[in-house]
Length: 259
Image (cartoon, rainbow, N blue to C red):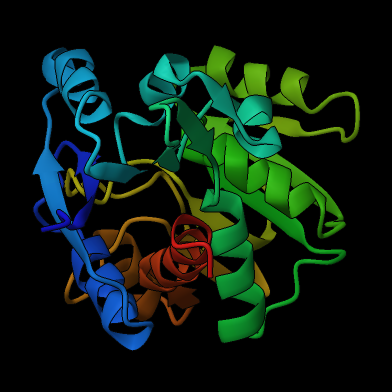
């Protein structure tokens, strides 16, 4: 009997992930016989677990969440253009000969969600991205394609924000702001840090949002994140990352299952 194709979402923590539910709903809808589970992997165990997945021919792909995106990319044999650009993987596909290919759908997921589901245009808008990890790079890459007025990055470690500025310098001039003292008004503010998972509020005030400002948290929680709740209290239109996850999941499911 043929074994089921297996997919995992990996991260630390990962128990809260909606990926298994979304992927299994898509599997039912498109009549695909797969198993999709969440596997929590502590950073020190990542290399060993990846080797286990690679040597198991039933494992066909991975979704990758914090804090593993950049380390998983480094372990891959090849990658799509965006993953190569930002040196981070949101997903992985294992080929027939067990080559591990990094994909990056993070930016596509968030931009599609903001534009299509929340009806917020990014063109000619001033955008602030908080955080400078693997997800932030993918988000900046996708936002550049939308032709915004400006993109500013604020990150605790300024050198990491400077790295993203350098990464895209050949096609766009990204600004870097002080994390502790964020000034100026923005049309769109995107949190790509794990602050919400840690229950920490971002160093923002209502004054950082333009008249019709929109806030987006890549993290999500059942009743909203600490950031989206703060936005609600301050009458700022906002969304958490559930929609991004749905858009990303649909795109990668089609790719994985060759639909």
